[in-house]
Image (cartoon, rainbow, N blue to C red):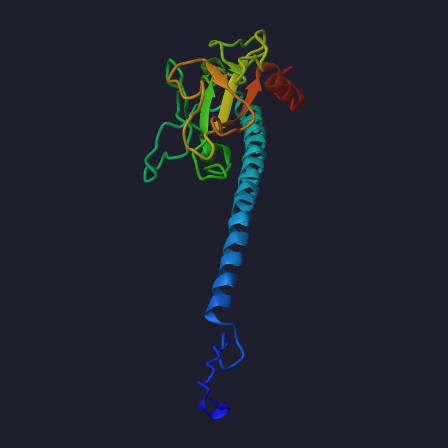
Length: 222
């Protein structure tokens, strides 16, 4: 058999005529991009959550300052807001009188001039000792009427048993649900800790000495 009789050799061109990538090469590139994105997404998600936690803590400190300011102007702390209907004229406003017995309800954000919700768009929850939110102005002899306390996940008390909190404000975090010991209708023990997969509430509280110090400094108390 001479060269003229040899069968023609078929060569497969893996590139297209324009010199671009072949389908196989494109598939490999897309697979690599998918793997890279898959590794980046958890990191980006964790960063967003960290930012939301930081923003919520900042907002809680602003709310605490707003409560001090309200007490200086009005001689008392505001009652919670119980209206959840966004179409109601009293939505976001403090109730004229606190419910008895007191329980968790919404922060009167409109009354205080603070943001309506936390970084997850969840509503702030608020509990106040009625003795410090009654129609009778606060004096240096005003004492707590309910034994509010805050503990961590391990059960260690974070607040003094002598000077208990008179107001507690918290965010329910990413899951929009009160976790641990929080959220009980009339329970006086609350829980605060570093957010974790099983607990993501973020809490702040006002004690009697803290409030008195601010009111004395503002000349509201002798």
